[in-house]
Image (cartoon, rainbow over all chains, first blue to last red; front, side, top):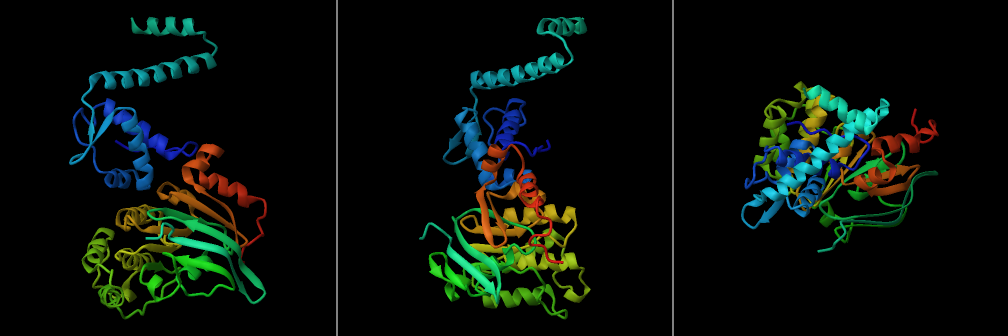
Length: 119
Length: 241
């Protein structure tokens, strides 16, 4: 999986989002150990302190737990993982509605079109 | 241990009547990667040379590791100059021998390992190496030390963009974690992601000193874009033609 970093927003925020995505899509499965900060930073080509800040956010979101011996472990709490997955899904849905609004469709029209397409 | 690694107060340097640095106040902590950014002639190299003791300040105070510049600070500072200073008949391994004699913190095995990962044959004579390869050797010499402060003056200017990424990764994965890296460059887009903080220098003065993510958060744009904006209005200023 490639790291994609854009110019307009803080780097740590983008790293946190992409690490979150990796966790909820199972790149780092529940209960597994995250690679060390330095390794992740090297892979993404970013400053280790910036990566550290992104990982601190994951911990705050309850996605990871610090382990004294094993570094950082991905949570096994499916409730947390589902909730975060749901938040991501909602963002994607909102992006769809925003893009449709730009084309002149109301929310219900956009929803109807989506249903039409599913048949 | 002193919390600040670099402390400058009212630091000024004049070459005759030309003022290169004009009252610089700068504090830098430990474990940071700091970009020293500015157009040609803004005072980047002068500041670096003052920090490693190659120049003496005209006015003001300067401390590294809480000490005045001298043998003690030089032992803790690893400096990459903006030009070559090696003899052509030497091999990279000759230079490693030299550095091992001069600096207690030079790690010979690490230097060899870095050569390998950068694709440099350490037993080749410098004479037979390309400019880019020589720059890599120079970088290896500097990064194979376990220093408190790494001063890198334009480390990526002479190599192609692919090698640039590789060199930045080499810096990222090899610097001493409690140490600080100060990198001067005008190639900001290439280097922005590896920095903690940016210092903008203009006509010998500090215009801005902030963390990269604070700049992005406040300005909604990259440090590179901000730099272009700040330095665009006066194309002739500070330029050396």
